[in-house]
Image (cartoon, rainbow, N blue to C red; front, side):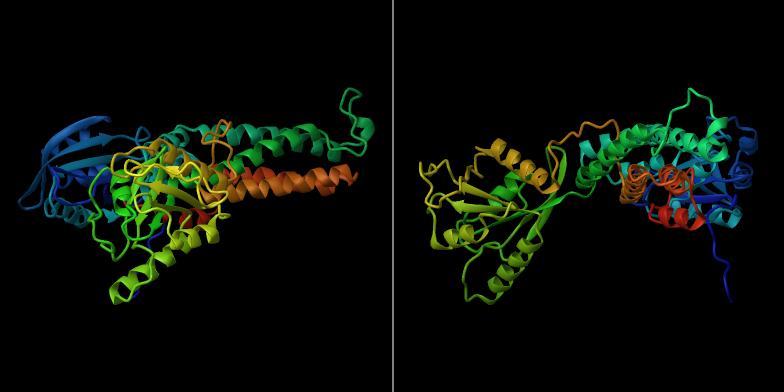
Length: 468
């Protein structure tokens, strides 16, 4: 028997876990939709939930023929709620069972399970937030570092929406000026109107907008790093101190450290924050020729990780000095900007005044004592910035893009404006140029959701987590 597909955009009362059920003190279930308060009142005691004012909390029981769980219900009346609809948050006991029992009662009462991101979708459709703030919600939920959280909060507060709207308004002015010349003959336009022989009215404004949009587009390259992070692989010969460095950067003992070469047989990874950038740090097996079957596999996996890594920290064992294997590796990779070369164990063996390999100046550190780590952090962030063509960790723009969707739309607007200005310089007629300006305006409107289609919205919100 065919089931009707549930779509975004209806007003059906929905419910979903806002917290993950498990071993916790509390579980939160969020409900929203037309009639959701009255529907919840059917399975709640005492019966005064229907009369509850917005922004109040009611204590009672979720019940059927028997009491299911003692709860607190936060009541939100439309339009003063996250979704803009009547909504409630049910705070019940934690654990894997209590919340599920409450959810089963709600579904039997008439609530359906919310789709991924459906609460935020309804907030957008009801004019509570624009699309940039919707996306910032998920950025905030998935932030890996404090810096990432701050940047997501900035967009959630509307910094990007404000910037896009201001830029779009400038383009609308240019578009309106151009359309005036299309609607009226030249002698009907007042004498104080800008002369535009062979020139787009407001061409200087369009050029300034293009410059702003290019800066916005460039901001995504760095924002992507703060959101997704960078893979940094630690490599080197066995017993060079890779696992000690891994543990020191992590500030915890994750990798086994012994004096026996080849202790690490496979790679291990963990997330760490360096200068606010999420780093996927990977400790690998020592690189050397070996007849040990298990170690051979570990070395092969390490070499594969080196190919995939965005940054490679290569350790030289200062205690044993530079080996032929170290020299071969350095000579093969010294022109690769991904590589950072480390002279480790500087507490036992200082870096030679003249390093044997020309053009290489390793950073002197001690994975054991932490000496030289400030220089190492700086080298890692500098290597990341060099690869992203970013001058500094803080671009001088008032707002930054938060998603690839936003970047693609900004790039679309840039392409339309570049063609607009090129045609204007060639003296092409306005009826050819004007549609391009309108395309740029529409692309910017799509960023905030002023221009949108149902399929685009569904594709975007389906990536959200359920309960948001």
